[in-house]
Image 1 (cartoon, rainbow, N blue to C red):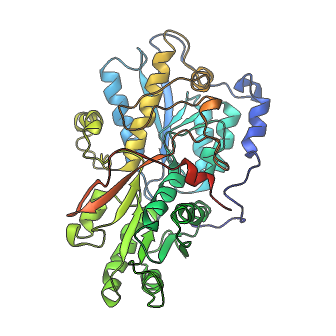
Image 2 (image 1 turned 180 degrees about the horizontal axis):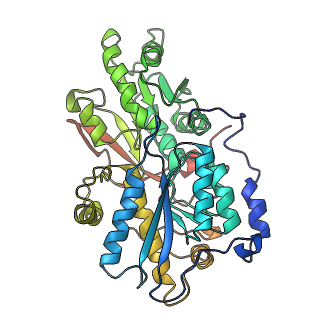
Image 3 (image 1 turned 60 degrees about the horizontal axis):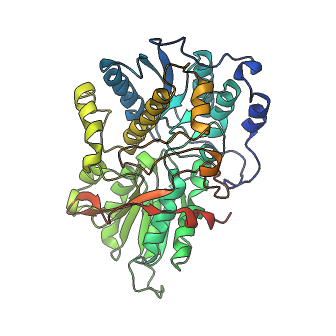
Length: 429
């Protein structure tokens, strides 16, 4: 995101604008003038859409639509989804709210059954058109607050809220002053409160909030400021200061500047969240001799080397081996795999019945349980399964994994998941 809009709290309790539309369209989305996505019967195609930004100057997630297409090739080669051929449409939202809304309107025009495994920073722009058409949004990346408030959204992870809160709790015990470098955007505006909720739970002072342009080509000003603020000799803490960049694809650019500037300052730790850093980024920044060595990183899922990812890797090797957009270490690719796992479970639960946006939503709302082979807890979206965290009423999975860079490799820092529900409940506006 490069533009700024009016300031608003990301933790508002009022209903999102699309809920008014949804209330009118509860019985049938067709009542709003749009025919909901549907399959015509056994053996008919099921059409879905996956979107993400590509070829922009900010965050790009080309692996998500590429993974969706690879999944479709694989599932169709094995008989389809419960006998239905899966057709995947893709759309580039260009990191632009107008383009994101166009993707959503195209989904409605194409009568898709669902939008699956997608990324966009403009939830309030695309969820309105989806709600009008009655189209569920399954497994978004979790980058916007709207994904955790809109009743058409079925998140599979805890998004940025869970990652930042979990990271803050871990850093509270090991860090002196903490500097957060985050995008000067609406999506970035929620990050300080989330990180602070974890820091506060650990008895730590709030982070120093530093805004940065999401599409900058260098971050020397930000790195020097962060280093000065986290190495202040007047600080009573005996722990090293911690620098936390949360700039998505621009983390790599930030770390280029950081690596040049850090030699002029006392040692500090670095930490961040998966999605801003993966193994390829660590390798590009010097591996075990780079600035990420020893860094704590929170993720939604097990580390990429975990055998629970073997099936996804097999599909990638068979269907996208030569496509360098599809990296099994990419959190976007992983999220898309899990989102399509949900879609598969939904279609199979419908048996020989009609597959439509209405029946898909109904199956999810009535309590379909989806297992993901241990990549997430069992997922379920009944009203009583929603965690009802204030500001995030659609959360069903607040668990994160704690990872650390050791000898240049991203490995699990501890076994299992860490539940961030209590931390998120303490988020302050």
